[in-house]
Image: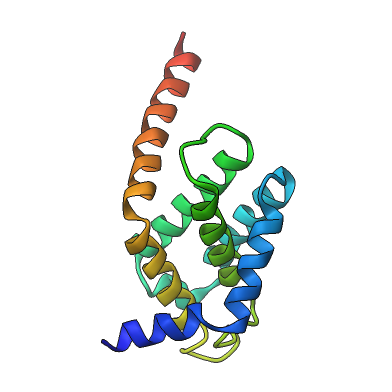
Length: 148
């Protein structure tokens, strides 16, 4: 029940609403989206506290970053714009050091980021799983092309 209260507080915050507005502006902007995905992966590499969250979380964020890249470059199109805005807004929130709980606060700084992204993974599980299946097929096809 506490997690529901936390996520509600985050998604109703003026900060997250602003991130969603940025997400709308990012749609269709290849360079901004690719850059955003790199920022997310970079934050994972730099955030010691995030490593403590676990490999599953890190892999899920990397998968979201890859999804953003593939949508930006037109390699993947089977996701609704509204869903993409939610994903983009969440990643913008994640990479921003100033959110509901600023990242520089020891131990607590990433709690809201992790809570928000866990909610995204749970809420958009089917869409993310569909992309993961696509990505595995895409990678397998790409490997076959290089071997020929």
